[in-house]
Image (cartoon, rainbow, N blue to C red):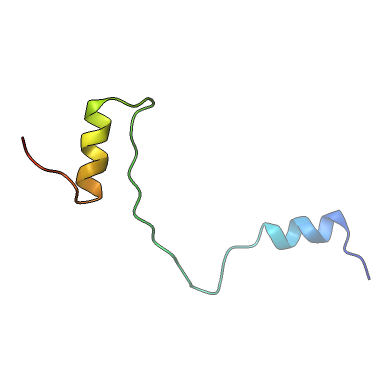
Length: 51
């Protein structure tokens, strides 16, 4: 039994009903690598030492 494109689109357009949610914390950094980005990464990883 194969599903048609219409059936697949109908299933895909339904909302998520199960109620499971995964909340992820994310940090964003500007493109490139410089001293400020390295300091921010160190803080996130709790490796930061104030100079």
